[in-house]
Image 1 (cartoon, one colour):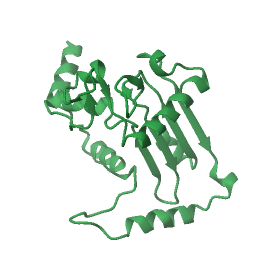
Image 2 (cartoon, rainbow, N blue to C red):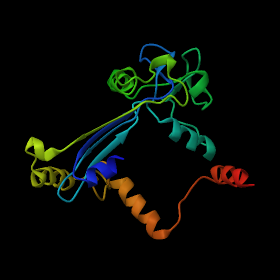
Image 3 (spheres, rainbow, N blue to C red):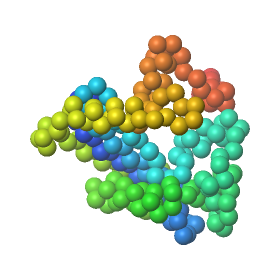
Image 4 (cartoon, rainbow, N blue to C red):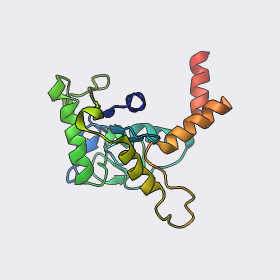
Length: 205
């Protein structure tokens, strides 16, 4: 949705809460959702679209690793007793950790409240699977005196700054997924894990 908002020349701020899966940085009970937040800002040629979960890893990314038979990093999960875990089952039995401790937890809690009680949806431990709340804010930047050329200049200044190591190109948030989408659309194919492909075949049967 934020891609469409940016393409319409608007600033977009979107957040969504989910069932409680993320612990407080100093606790180990799941108290808020993974609560992704997305911010989109249109430029003259380049759109900034940042979409990030407020937990160390999104639930979806964790399930992709599980289907690939790969383990998550050791700073993503804790078990029901608060011990570090790499078992994807602990996303439900234990909890996911917030992104960068209090920084991610504070942002996740803001999304929890904005996408929950603020709009009349469920929040905290009362938020269950299927009760996700969503807020979408769209702002017309022209009403704020926006200068799209200045926005573009800032983005291009970042892209042209010095690259570290073997980095070939500095990407603005949203560019990588846009490139992947364009490549997949051109190829007419989409790469998915074998386990997921088998699940889709089983559903078709």
